[in-house]
Structures are given as structure tokens and as C-alpha cells.
Length: 275
Image 1 (cartoon, one colour):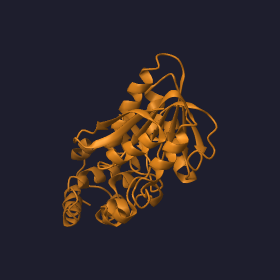
Image 2 (tube, rainbow, N blue to C red):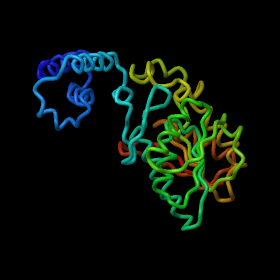
Image 3 (cartoon, rainbow, N blue to C red):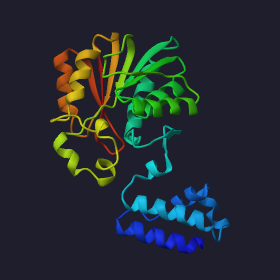
Image 4 (cartoon, helix red, strand yellow):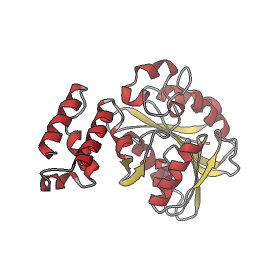
């Protein structure tokens, strides 16, 4: 099968679904196991590779996310395995990690303890363990399938993270200097309006934040007080329209020094508070 014919057909199928046709080239390189820059070295591929590529393109046309097809996503300049058991790491979450790293630096060189709650792929916990050398990182999730992915990501990125299966604080026994969380925060009624790639593929357990999208912010804020050292930090990722509501939740529970950080698009994205 000729490379040009495969690419032409692939681009046409993706364009029909308003998917960036440039992905056709990237997915062909993936099927070949090469870098996309090296495609120019190939004129033809064997039938089995062509068939593999066609199956991949059909998946993408059916809105299976690119990262689920390749099984990989870059985050914080690290590579992470992803599959249908975890949310695909997003650039907005790097704002949370960068802020957490800055806060960890405030503690100086002493060892600090960090909890990543609702860890999913482990992208937050693994990044913190990688970039904060004096941090002891624990990460929890209610999903054993997600935790298995997270464990693999810690190993592949050469860091140690203690992963715990826990429904929020149920099995957490330590206290922490910093607790971070990117919890499910989509309103139940909004889920059906999400892009096909998200609502039909990414785990509902990691999306559904309850009727008003604030269920987990309330639960974590209430309990975290008992698990934070004095002057410890609670850091949340939030939806772009949730800052005021999350601030109010934290105020009611007794947190102080509450501040909101915007993402690169100018949307509210992270809330930080002290206890």
C-alpha cells in the first residue's frame, strides 16, 4: 500500500468528522512505530501495516481520543500512559502542578508530605515527585484500574509514589503539608453536552461532580482540615466558572488566605487556601 494513498484516505475520513486532518500523518507514523518526521523515508508499507492504520483511523473517526489510541500523553515534559480508565492529562492541570511546586519550595529543604487526591493517571503526583526532590508523595483514588495506570507511570518516570485505594480520606492515615486535587467537577446535567471524545470515552467516575459540580470540593474541604498540618495548603483545580463557589465553600469551613490563579487562557483554574 502506498503511503500517499493511505494518508489521502485517512485525511478524508477525519475531515468528515471535523477532526484535524494532520492527525492522519501522526497516526500513520504511530502505526509504523516511527517518528512522523521519518515518514518521508517510506514510499509503501506492507498490507498488515496498512490494515492496522485503517483500523486506527476508523477509531479516530469514531471520536476515540488520539491519546487513547496511542496510549500516551505528554504532561509537564514527562510521558504518561493513558487508557480508558483515566482522564487524559490536560495542559490546564499543569497550572495546578506549577503552583504546587512553588508552594513546596516555600518549605525549604526539609522533607515535606504531599497528598494527591483523585490521582487518576497519576500525572500530578508523579510530576510533583519528579520535580520536588524533598517531597514524600502519596496519591489516592477510588478506582483500582486508575491506580494501576498511575503505578506504571511512576515506574516509567523513575519516581516513588505511595498509591492508596481510598474513597477520599477513607484509607488515609497521614498528615500533610500540601493536599492537591483535581476532582470530578462537571455538573451532572452538563455531561451530555460534552464533546463526544470526552463523554463517550473518558471515565464517568472522573467527570461527574454531582448536581452542581461541587460535591467533591465540599467533601474534601471538610475533611482535609484534619489531615493538614497547621498552615498547610489545600490546592484545587476548578472549572472555569467555579471560583466564587469554591471560595465560599473554603470560607465556610474556615480556610484562610484563599486565592485564585488563572490559566493561560485567562480563566480561573486553581484555588489555593491555608488552614
